[in-house]
Length: 204
Image (cartoon, rainbow, N blue to C red; front, side, top):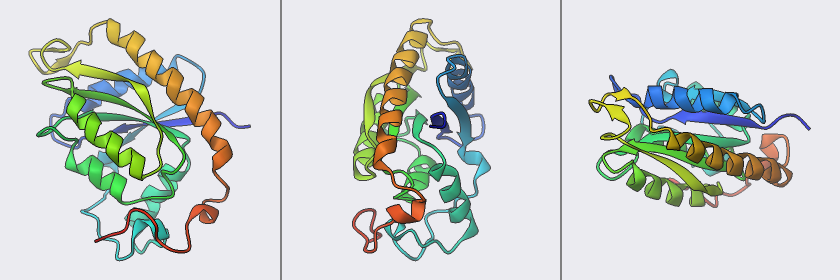
C-alpha cells in the first residue's frame, strides 16, 4: 500500500497572516517523522470565489475549472491538518468556503487541528468539528492551540512554546493512525464514491 498522504491546509489568506509561519512549523515538524508524506496546501494558491457551483457538491458534478482543480487536489489525500485562525469565535470564511465546495472528496479521511488566536483559536476548532461531522471526516481528539500572547513575540513573530511540539506529535500520531485505517472505507476511483442523489452538503 502506498504511503499515507496528509495535507497541511493553511486556512488564512489575509495579508500579513500569522498562519503561514505556523503551517511551515507544522510541515517541518511533521516531515521529520518519516511516517507519511506531508504537503502544504495554501488556500491562497487556489482561486476559489464564494461558492458558485450550480449543483450541490454532494452530486460531484462540477462546472468550473477552479472547482475541478480543488477536487483533484483534495481527492489525493488521506487526511488533513487544518491550520486555522479564529475570527469572531469562528474559523476564517475562506476556509469554510473551501470546505463547502466539495463533499465526497472529504469523506472518510482523518483531520486534526492547529489553531491560533487570543484564546488559542479553540473556538474556531469547535466550529470546524461540527463541519467535519457533516462531511464524514473523523477528527481526532488531540489538537494544538497557540496563543497570540505566549506563542507570538509581540503578537506577530511566531515563537512557539516547546511544549507544543509534543502536542503536535500526539495529534499527528492520531491522524496517521486514523488516516491509514479509513483507507479501507474509500472505494476507488472517486467517481464510485459520488452518490446518485444528493444526501449531504445540499445547497439551499
